[in-house]
Length: 160
Image 1 (cartoon, one colour):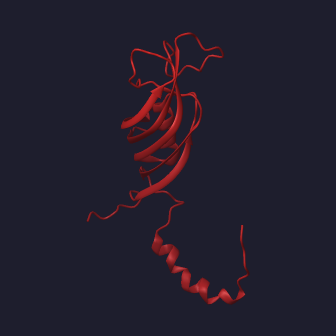
Image 2 (image 1 turned 180 degrees about the vertical axis):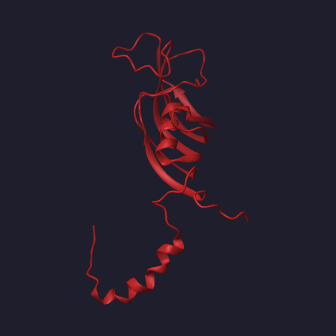
Image 3 (image 1 turned 30 degrees about the vertical axis):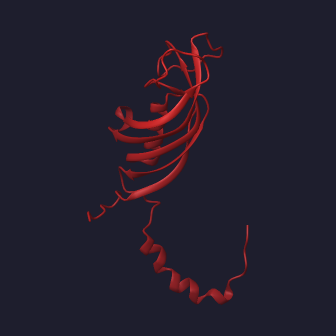
């Protein structure tokens, strides 16, 4: 077994990807937000759109043209590797999925610059690029249990 390096243990998470950006840009933002260097993601029921001729960093126009195609990612798994920091931060995506286009079109593949039409929920786990100050080990949690149980007689019921 390979010992875990501080900051390199798997971190499960769930999040929402921003809509209207390319999928790649939304995942890049997620990786930066969680300070992840690697992640495996599961995405489902994500509406997408392809707008021909729109630059990846351009905002979505107020009026969609005739060259716009709508679709839905039914399910997708992605492996993501992040590189660089700051302005040079990049995300590289590799995955497989099931999607469908709502409009008739000759090319049914999912373009690399596909945009999310709405925010999309995802789950996954990743490896942190840096130690996460919020994360603690199970041993640290369990170390407090004897002390807490010793004071259990003063506990009051709670439900939510």
